[in-house]
Amino acid sequence: MIPKIILSSGPAATRRTIGYLFGKGRANEHTDPHLVASWNSFAPDPGRSPHRDPKDVMAQLVAQLDQPVKMLGDKAPRDTVWHCPVRAAPEDPILTDAQWAEIARRIVAASGIAPDGDGEACRWVAVRHADDHIHIAATLVRQDGRRPERGYDQRAVQRAARKIEVDYGLRRLKQGDGTGAKRLTSKEHFKAKRLGQDAATRDVLRLRVRRAVAAAADEAEFFALLEATGVTVRLKFGPSGDALGCNFALPADTNDKGEPVFYSGSTLAPDLSLPKIRKGLATTSPEPVAARPGDPWRQATAAAERMPHHLIHSDDPTAQGQLVALGATLDILSFTAPAAVRAELEQAASAFERATRSRIAADLDSSRVLRRSVQAIWRKKPEDGDGTGFTMLLDAVLTAVAFAMHWHRTHQHAQQEAAAEQALVRLQIAYAQAAEPVVAGLAQRAPSLQMKQRFARHLQKAVPDRAERILGDPAWDALTAVLAEAEAAGHNADALLDQALDQRTLDDARSPARALTWRVRRLGERHAPSPRAQAARARSAAHGYVDSTRSIRSTPAAPLQPRTPSRRR
Image 1 (cartoon, one colour):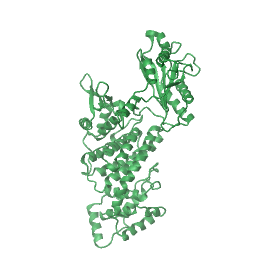
Image 2 (cartoon, helix red, strand yellow; image 1 turned 90 degrees about the vertical axis):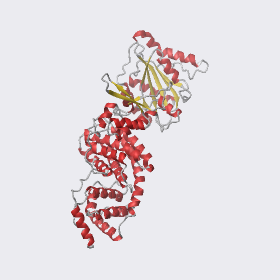
Image 3 (cartoon, rainbow, N blue to C red; image 1 turned 45 degrees about the horizontal axis):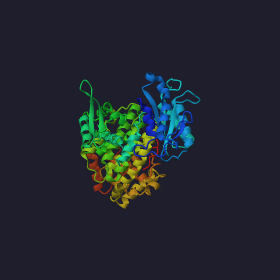
Image 4 (cartoon, rainbow, N blue to C red; image 1 turned 60 degrees about the horizontal axis):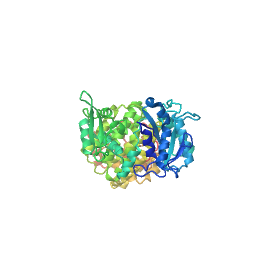
């Protein structure tokens, strides 16, 4: 249940509000508007007075609501109308008028508008003109001439809504921390519906601005990317001539005068004000960190693999910085992904956006490598012939999102945890679609039966309790292919397999062989043998044997990590 408080001012504020509530709506969406509750339980009802002119009844209702305000004359407050729509979720049961009336009384009591048992409280009405919501309208002068005590009424109303959800068996929303993006207004929602748009302008702008922040290396490129995606930017300048803020608009979204409707960055999302955008761009604008030329897939995947460690062992600002970078990675991946999985990744990025913000200030320094590597993927479009680069990066991102969900849970960030969980579901679908053809392609390169049997014997010796499940996995041939290719490149295949097995548990992996395939592939790329070692391996192969017992691990096995929550591959 979502309540939202709106304040109105001016001599005609009450008349405008009541006129809208009992009118047809901006798109004729109001049906059977009528009172379900009022301050005295017998206020005139313009919707249910069949023997009187509705306009006369409406005028009478407005006059009664306005009476305490008029009594104060010039001493009346600037804001005179308190308006609170209260909407149920689409899947909630349809409530009766009596139930909505009780909900309205609980809301006005919690807000301070009309405390229980206070006969001199503000005058208010609750109007229902649809199955799923009501509107509560009140005038902000008590009947004894005093102002209502409604400090922090938005928080109080939200707390009341959470209790109402429990009492009426409604969908239970997560408690927020004030860092969420501003919700669409009814006007924006119905405007998009009237124009036949799939999404409201605010949501489209937020997505495009976030992508531009994720992709841009500096401020100039940020504005250029916005222009390229059809976003109009209007800068706000201070007395010094420096840009202090910026507003964004879509040329096709205009007001009744034909002018573009601009939104400030901070109203799109708390982290999209110009100062915060500049702070984010500062992590990519200095001289890039040295990276392997032409291999941003490997660089980005390695950086994403380090995220679980940061989320477990680093301080909170560093972990929050990692989440910001993870959100930027999803924004770019959803834009550059193969067509088959693009829709799912876009939904994952949109959902995870909420998980990138909390009350913890982000330290972005540790995320530079990931952001620059993903930007390099977006700019250079590096070769990824068999799709393994994208699939391995997506696999690492999927694991990072699972750990992000766990991190938010431990910090009691309810909305962020739910957002990460939603993103995880979408990523799992996208990963399955992306991995299937890649695994099939690798399986076609499977080695000889003799070599596969050798790998199987080592597996049975290394993990006898898991070997049967791995050997029966459809991705077993793909795993043997990457083991054989690593061995041909000079690695000790058994040692790589041992290291892969020593990493995170496979208990929650839907396809353990597929999970091992990516681990072996990444380990093989990360720890390339020296030229001397490769020459030695080549000589051994030329003499008809391979020493599969000597380990040439260049680093110790990665430490075991806590079980990844809800992470299935």
